[in-house]
Image (cartoon, rainbow, N blue to C red):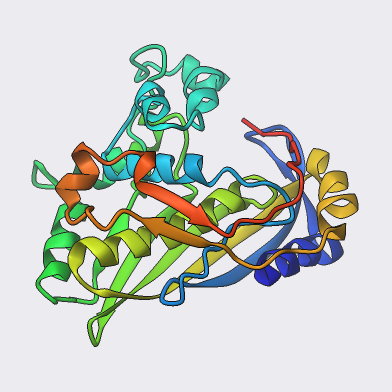
Length: 283
């Protein structure tokens, strides 16, 4: 929580105004932020200065793991986070690659689990990483990436948190996640949960101990219509201690995550929080 609040305060105190072309809104912006989450100690980085909907964040990432490209599939898992970008993004609605209602295009996990090869075919990046880590291997290139500039025109949204690099050292698994752009009041809450969850679940299914997750944000911003709520409400609240994430120990493989896992397989203990804050969302 201290890392999160320090970043929010830094943006409000030191940020510069930037006009964002995609959303048509101004953002108060800083460059470069680094956060660390201690998965080994089960210090779940869930925001406590407002109620945070952690289940939706985990559901979204399970959708990435499964390679989903349709908002309806994400909704079945328990999150509506892709509804707006799939169905209310004006530029995407007129895109010839859009297949119809709820189609998101070639996004996130769809890219990473079918990463195109220049000589034809594709690579399932996640299956390859799980196989290596399960065997105790680390080639210093265990990278699960959603970023494919040649496919941006085929998706409703470019990936924001686009790269997850796993490292195995002395049977302990670490994660470095990189995010090009972050809506701090709304998106960062989700992204913190997802980085932590990804390391925790990957350690579990590969039979390794979890270490720390390192989260790099390149462009961290607060939209103009979010600023008053952040400065005058959320930053004036005192945080509570970090809760713990409980994962069903029966989840033992990538296939489990792809087939039968639901949100019922996750729980949070000791979550104290303030009232929700309804921040505006920029499509």
